[in-house]
Length: 165
Ligand code: MG
Image (cartoon, rainbow, N blue to C red; front, top):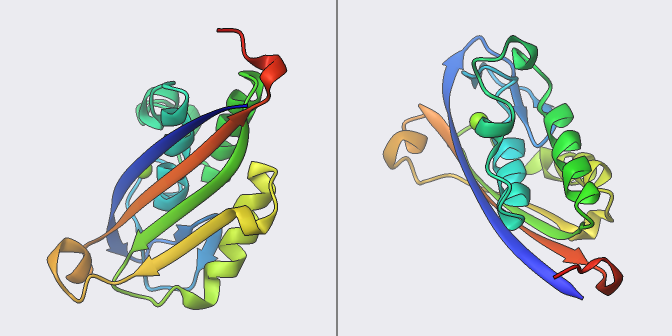
C-alpha cells in the first residue's frame, strides 16, 4: 500500500452581517466570512490538503475566484469535486485532521456536526475526521476578531493494484 500526506492552510476575513459556514455547517454568528464562495475556510484548507497530497495544485487553481460559476458556491460542492478527483486518481482518504483558529463564537457545540458532514463527503467513518478549534488568546488578527485561520492535514491511501509507478 502506498500513502501520501498533504497539508492545507486558508484564511478568510470576518465581516458583520455575513453567514458563517465552517466545516460544512452553518454556525450561528453575527459575523461571517468575506469570500467569493460561501467562505468555508475549513473546507478550503481541507481541499488543499487533499490536493497537496497528490500534488494537484490548490483550490484557487481548480476553482478560480474570478469564475462566476463559483460565486457564492456551497464549499461542500467544491470538496465533493476534490474527493472525486482523488478517487479518479485511484486514491482514498485515510484520515483528515483540521485545526480552526477563531476567537468567537465558540465552536465546541458544532464540532461533531462538522465531523459528520465532512466524513460523509470524504466517504470515511467519522472517527477518521478530526476537527479541533482554538482561540489565539486574543492575539493577532484572529484574536482581534478580524479573521479565521485553518490548518488541515490529510492522509491518502492507494491499494497496491492501483500503483502504476
Ligand atoms: Mg478560501
